[in-house]
Image 1 (tube, helix red, strand yellow):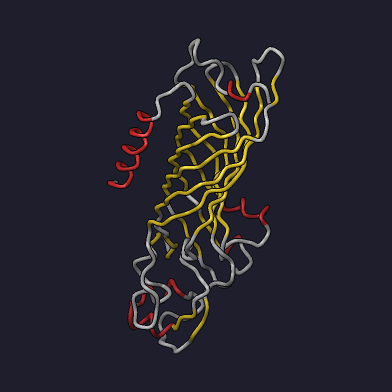
Image 2: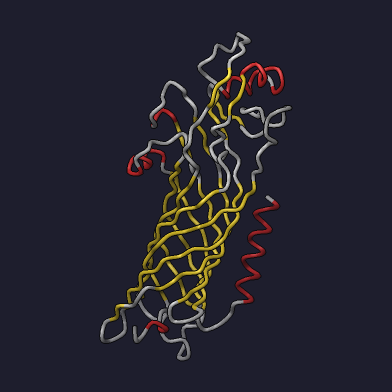
Length: 276
């Protein structure tokens, strides 16, 4: 909760600092999909595990071809072997995810009607961001937090330290925006998040030993680590839970932006693109 409050205060403070003719504030609504060890290899089938995503943003037109956007988003990505290619492994995860990012939008060109009441601008974007997550796995009729368990021996001698739940990411993507009138801009964007962790889904390519986890991190950690092993036995088995797939998540959706200063000095929301 403290992290959410901090992000909201940071967002509001940034809005105050950016008060100008070229500032828009808006909302995003759409979906999120996950790519990693618990998803299929074909991108089109990831939508079987699609979740909701929504957020708020502030966008400032720096120049004709460049805009800066500060965003705060919430999403609930998930993955499940039941929808993947390894149903026998029976691993799954879900997480609430909060992210904040600052990106630069590079506007490619503008297409305007003669009366200038409509303007269509495609763009690409990239930047830097931070996300907070907490993967949970299904256990019987409930969900348990996976990071504290150490399902891959995290925290034990000879294994990695527990992974951090707040990390850096790089948002990349493309979109398009168009004016409705001198106050409103509609848009659509598709964005990928490059992650620097392979534990977004709690599953990596690390080699682990079932008996190490059972003795060091407990029965539940061992059961969640490898569901193919009888939980009533203590076996000395070494295995790799995941593979080479790197973890990503994607957020795509519609955007609706409102220009703060839409008077005679402001013109239209994308007025800076006239003359493209």
